[in-house]
Image (cartoon, rainbow, N blue to C red; front, side, top):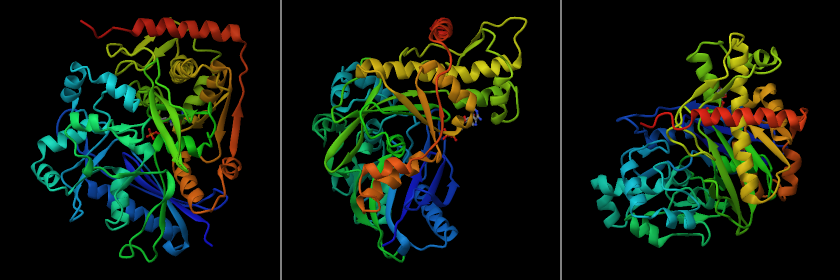
Amino acid sequence: MSKVIMALDQGTTSSRTILFNEAGEILASNSMEFQCQFPQSGWVEQHPEDIWTTQQITMVRALSEAKLTMKDVAGIGITNQRETIVAWNKETGEAIGKAIVWQCRRTTDICENLKKEGFGDVIRQKTGLVIDPYFSGTKMHWILKENEEAKSLARQGKLALGTVDSWLIWKLTGGEAFVTDASNASRTLVYNIFEQTWDQEILAHLDIPSDALPEVKGSSEVVGYTNLRLFDSSVPIAGIAGDQQASLFGQACFEKGMVKNTYGTGCFMLANLGNEGLISSHGLLTTIAWKINNEITYTLEGSIFIAGALIQWLRDGLKLFEHADVTEAMAQSVDDSGGVYIVPAFVGLGAPYWDPYARGTIIGLTRGTTREHIVRAGLEAIAYQAYDIFNCLQKDMGQSLPMLKVDGGATANNFLCQFQADILGVDISRPEILETTAMGAAFLAGLAVGVWPDQNALRTIRKEQRRFSPQLPAEQISVMVQGWEKAVNASKNWAKD
Ligand code: ADP
């Protein structure tokens, strides 16, 4: 029997296909970028056909790179940009209008009205989310209000509204399967994560007909087969998860209290909550991590808006260096940040401060401040922000969290990983394969088709590349953290009249 698993990682800027073998090694990887459109200020769209075509091309290319065909693939796992919504005609399979991307702010007014109506509590208690244009619900409402074709199809029961996983599976199965998984459903704003149903009260409030929504499946089960008109073999589609949840799974964070943080443009920190969801007291989001064998695992999620983006700004805005990879040596060339703190509140501050009026601050400058101090303060700022979220998770969960697993582009930086371990006072574990998102999708699919017998088998497949242990004394950390808190206070409220 074949033991090759194909992971489709459909992201916001590119589609990627990675082939994994039974040992979790990458056999081939192919990715292709595609365009976003910005038709108005704050609007972000993509062509649904681009999403599908680029994904399909990378599948073909990855197979050819590995000298394999679909006949060699045991199962397909899908992970995807979350919350982005596609509308299509269930009869013809044709997309209606553009995909509305998670970043799109076009439903800001709709959200403001929902908040004014006092609907926020209902949303929070049933979905674990907050009212924000980010999530799919108000995007679906917008399509049904603004797009005549969608409106008319909805009246005839022929409209499909789905997240990107649903769209890809529809395409892959030639329209046979109209499904999503619990992790993707939990990001739509219309799924009751505790009762595990599309929530009729919320759907009615947003005028979304439930027959336009996909069936919600488990994250690790066969939901359909690839259509023979597309490929030479009918391969089971056996794993689905939103990108951050997939990365939690790919990091083998299977038990309650296990946490991962992805350091990319921003950061996404997720903690495994076990089988019981809880609503955060610190504005973090409660989401379904995955549903396996009918059992739900919940996760608590905190995000940081600006992380690696701060390093990009130091590079492109301040022109302090040419390549991000020199920041490690620059930071290590000085003993400390020389008392400099950067608070990268470029777009306000998220958890636990929730201040949309905060703005970026560089504070503590003296005549002795050098470029190196500023670069070091930039990297430290990423770690301090993660420290804040980590503490929120600990408070919400009422337990101390034993370690942090990390991934994402910025974790190539050893200084950042070491500083993060020092500030948190826990070990940081960096895996060999940083493609944890694709790996998670592969794990979910491989479990369902028997490439791996159980989650235990996956623990050894995720290999640690390096561990960073805390080295600084607690008193020193406490002084440094106090400095961070003072700097955050200085950045608050800046943009308020
Ligand atoms: P995304 O998926 O959000 O595009 P990636 O995981 O590819 O992000 O990571 C890219 C981000 O990581 C960029 O913002 C970049 O500035 C940052 N980055 C890359 N290499 C380093 C490094 N060596 N040190 C610090 N930051 C880095």
